[in-house]
Amino acid sequence: MNRPQFESLDQAADATADALVRAATGSAFQLFRDREFRRLAAIEQLSQTEQDRIFNELVVASVVLIMLLLEAPDLRMADEFRVYCAELRARIPRAHVNQLGSMGVEGEHFRDWERLITMRYEEYARDRHDVRAAAMGLESSEKGLTVDGLSNIQLLVPVQTAAIGCHDHVCRGNTDGRGELFKTILRSLSRLYLELRVPLEGGRITPLTRARVAVKRTLRRMRRKT
Image (tube, rainbow, N blue to C red; front, side, top):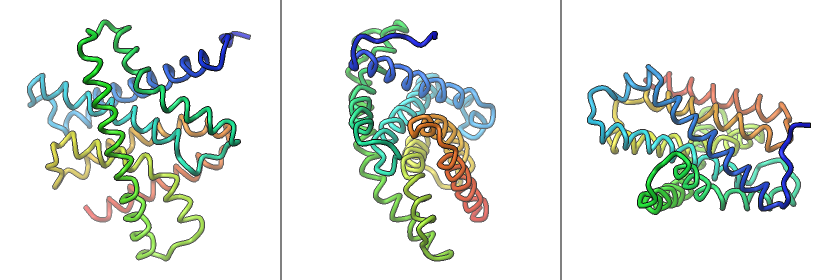
């Protein structure tokens, strides 16, 4: 009854892209304000410029995660809705820039933000193939690959790729001994990922359950190695 009425599919897509970007920004802000994250990232010891850089990386990781999700090949949806998701993915960078404008950010910074999003998207899109291969190798070495194992690996490729890339940029490449920080980033991005993926798949609970189990398994593996 209270749902907004849209005059065109383009208008609906713009509104949806805006909502997705707001979810990404909110998730990044929540992580940045998290006490454990701030301790592990030593936020209070950093300059304001460096703090701003880290926050921007958290935002971009969340935004790019949504883009990777919208083009995930294993999304369970009708072909026509997959086309709509492709339209949404293309609108995400501009939706973020529009949001910055509504917050009073000066237009001179818009192009830098679009370039950063494009750069990180291209980087993470390349890296997801290596992430998938590494996960398959680990799964095979532990208990052998199964259909369910392959499905879980594919399910988590977007979120693991974004978390690995974000962790690397937050640490400026110096990630040795900072596994706990990675886990914190992964948990945050996983929450955002699961909250968005289930509605995209029509609200089915099965993918959510599988994804939660797969995330917990990943974190357990990391705990055993540290």
